[in-house]
Image (tube, rainbow, N blue to C red; front, side):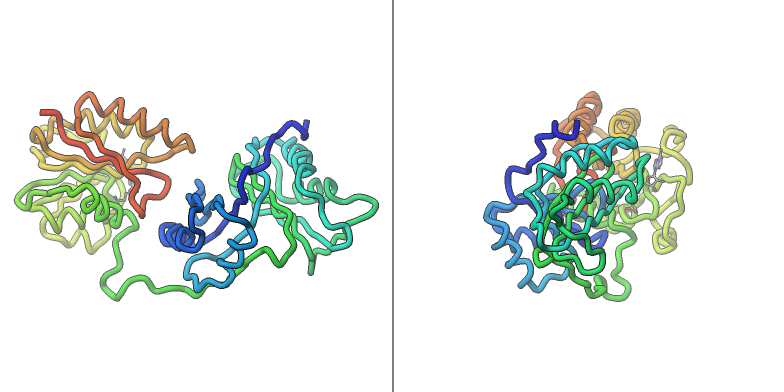
Length: 349
Ligand SMILES: C[S@@+](CC[C@H](N)C(=O)[O-])C[C@H]1O[C@@H](n2cnc3c(N)ncnc32)[C@H](O)[C@@H]1O
């Protein structure tokens, strides 16, 4: 069965890790260092995939010589396969590994596996299965301490990548811990940056004398941004707001779920924002239910959360729901969006 995967990646591909939360900067650095490469974040934070335009050796040379702040580990990979959580998958992966270019039989090797996600098998099931797939009577010898080549297996829940590389090709940097913010300027959350970026990108104008309703507000990054621009913000979330946000005189926290709001008790708004961790069609349905709280033509910002990796489908389905009450819907990925994208819209007149 293991032979049925046409898993060769068509172009040289690198898996890159960076510190969690620094994906946007790492992608930017990679695009600068690898002209023409297609660079995107994987579903699991801190992991990026770069599909190269040029050849692998040039790319690795550029990365090895770079003064990078964010690029920690670089692993060239040759195979990509979709896997399941069941116990038979290590054997199937071993079948697929036989499609890799053969190892140098004279140079020692080891299998290195990083498994993220939940599976019925463990890393200890994968390593021997893959080692067996490569070792023949003629070699290569296994050396767990100082291998000369490494079969890297990188698993991201239902996606697996594999690459067999001489150790010289694997880049591994210990990054300095970086201070990002001057004292007092630290954002409340990464989310705060997403709203600042959306305001700029979509040229949103928030009326200074207006009221905003912020759904899924905790810990309060968006609330703080809204409170800087508008007269009053009603923040809705069962979670706590940061004390810096609670202390703002124009913020009211309604501690609870959006579904439990009583529209007749909270008045009218000039903007609605929604960063709730919800399945996109559920989140969009709440936006439709609350649209009448907004003055006609008022604007809304909503994050479409990619709760699975079918990103396009989530965006399409959310828009379909939103269109019943909202128009002029525009969607764009902000640099600080993680597994999500940002939609802005106006209430139908
Ligand atoms: C990504 S966080 C929001 C971050 C926030 N925008 C900020 O800038 O700090 C998502 C929030 O959605 C809230 N949430 C999820 N479901 C919700 C619901 N049904 N009603 C209200 N809040 C909800 C969670 O409690 C969580 O605090």
